Length: 353
Image (cartoon, rainbow, N blue to C red; front, top):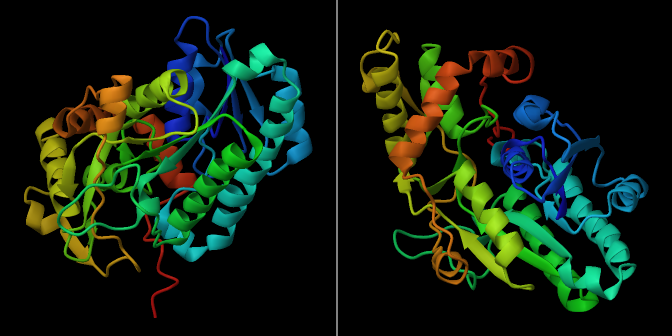
């Protein structure tokens, strides 16, 4: 099976590329624009393999993407290329609309033209898997779960752009017959995550003796999913999922943000006792909340578990331990990022008056 992975130098996309490159009979082409959060070191372990290749290209550049399809002749597309940080979408929504909406539209059009040119046998095997987020569903109260039937109610520029992309993918299936599958996942964490996100930022702040900024009162709740579990789920959906269907992917690890930060602090202190601050209350710092901050996300993964047989291997505690150990052991990966790309500053404040 020949698979194009868009955004394959990003956090989740690189995990998918590493997984696919390790499977017999798979050939993967990583198509990535290489924006600020992309890093070719995330695919360094597979860069020399004969079944892996890379093309630097913007998914909005239709002629170039058409050439990639023509040359590679994929059996499937796994679309993960996206701007993904809510705070950055607050500061600059235009780039999110361009990449997540216009880029998805462009990719769909290229895939549709390519699909229409295939013979009947190849058409029966072709898949376009669009990878999305649970944030398109908006926010939950203290009870309830997102299911595949939950109405869309995005509250941030990021989630609105992903919701728009989801709707385009669905429309291209129902209008043009493009064989698509959509998945929506809960918050991911794990190795190689760009340190603007909560878990890596907190780990690195503790290691550097810096304060731990927590939005609002810290009670906003998320459902956490280890990136390696997510990659396995995406492969399962690609190969076993029913065309035209949606699948929610969640790890059933629901934890509020303050408790996440406390668990990170305790885990880092246990592994690196010499870390400067000894007490959590001395290092945590409550800061003004994110504009439009969703209260709670929680996914019901019953469909993917019962119909496709996928289950995560990590609990939140085992996954967090694995993640913290990785960042402790890979200073050579994150120190250049903090020096040259992102120093840990607060984002998403331009909307605050």
